[in-house]
Amino acid sequence: MKTTKIWANFGVEDLARTTKFYSELGFKPNGTNDELTSFTFGEDNFIIHFFTKERFKWAVNDEMADLKLGNEIIFSLSAESVDEVHQWLLAVKNAGGTIFAEPQSIEKGYFFGFSDPDGHKFNVLYWPK
Image (cartoon, rainbow, N blue to C red; front, top):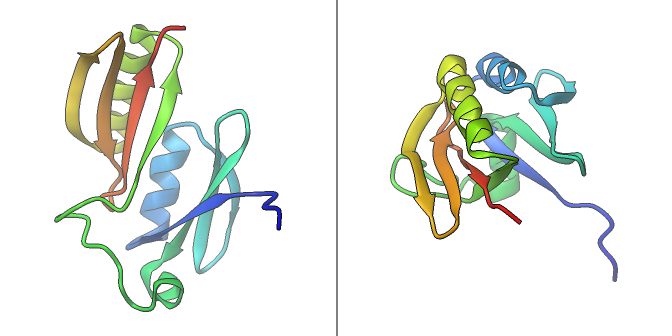
């Protein structure tokens, strides 16, 4: 067997709020309807679908993670410089995201962590080559 594509699916409370948040961060819309909003991330156009929680529950047999208690997954978004990490930080704050890890050095890299309005976690990471 061969997998030709991978994407992510999340449950969200409010599609309009999610659409606004990721649009303000500059991600490319990949479609929307009454049950989902979708965006592409990165040069490889990784797709993340954000479904209404009601629609998403069928895929996880009604067992959704409580994001206030833990993480389901964390995605890393690459940055090309420390300055770009700070640009992302301002954009996330302006879009209404929550910063859970302030900008900081780690080994030879630099990052900060944020969650979207539903609690899905991301970090923005600069790692010099």
